[in-house]
Image (cartoon, rainbow, N blue to C red):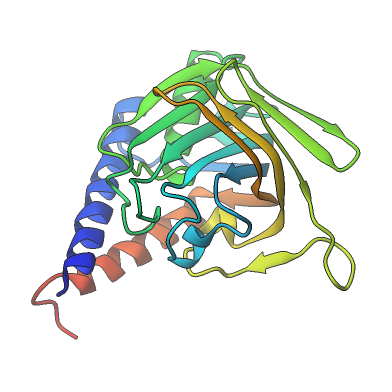
Length: 250
């Protein structure tokens, strides 16, 4: 097994351990609570569009500095309603490495929980975030902040407290409508398909950062996912990781 594969395997297995620990710690129980969300994804990063990380390629710049924000239209975690709440994640890959190959060793992983949520909802959102935002660093930090969105014409503007405003718009495809990316190599249930656009700006002031990007990658998606879909996805990923271990049967 080559060095890159070893690094990827170690990072992914570490991330799976962190994900399991995060769910147990945030809910006080095993990850067995059924959940489902219908939501919209707003995503931007420092790469030139489209983001190469989703295709297992190196970032356009030295690092991939990225944000995902999920606005839940309708959702439930067990008996806890999540309608109208939001979560966001800011992350950064190491220099010269994609999010994929450095998974488990990202420079930081900060998750922001909608400050409007009550304590039960906050714990539920942390648990959901462990799946839709798989932990990619050795440690995860949580913050509570207002997460808002304003749509003016084609422009979507998102703010995550005082830490990270970003905005973007979809591009026009050659045959009308926005370009759609479907079944990218690293697609997960939230990113089975998404619409491609351009980030007008991406700013972030937390985690020791001072981002200020313009005309970079922007993605948008409407989706519906639940715990069963993620269980299948994570089980399949775990199976693939097991097959990559030294000595595994071919």
